[in-house]
Amino acid sequence: MPRAKRRPVTFATVRKLALALPDTEESTSYGTPAFKVRGKLFARLHDSGESLVVKVDLDEREILLRTDPKSFHITDHYLRYPFLLVRLAAVSEPVLRERLEESWRRSAPKRLVAAFDAA
Image (cartoon, rainbow, N blue to C red; front, side, top):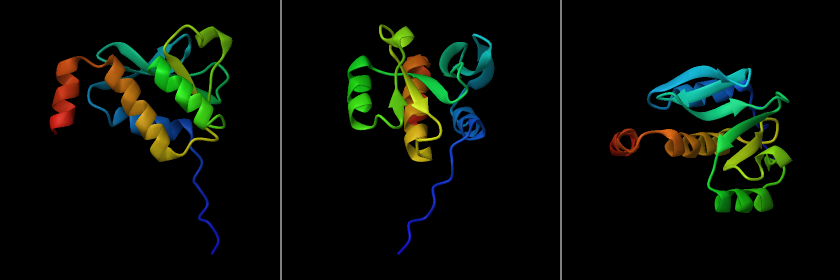
């Protein structure tokens, strides 16, 4: 049985998923489209236009880089910062959703996260 083709993830997909998170607004960061929660950055389009920059726990980043190097990568610029780059052409929509939500949680106020979890 042939496998179903995966729909490619685009920045429009990113926008849809990010704006579905509470109190998210579209903005810019370093001249690229970005998403913020109550003014705090949680995702932005990388300068390359091919990857999304998201916040991540540094230990989790190492695991993701090892287990899925097609979807995730890092540049020298981000080595000392808690960020991860997500290749839009390689990542699945469910994985992107998970990464965006985790990044949102790292930027959102604790009360907003608690309200989101309770909903």
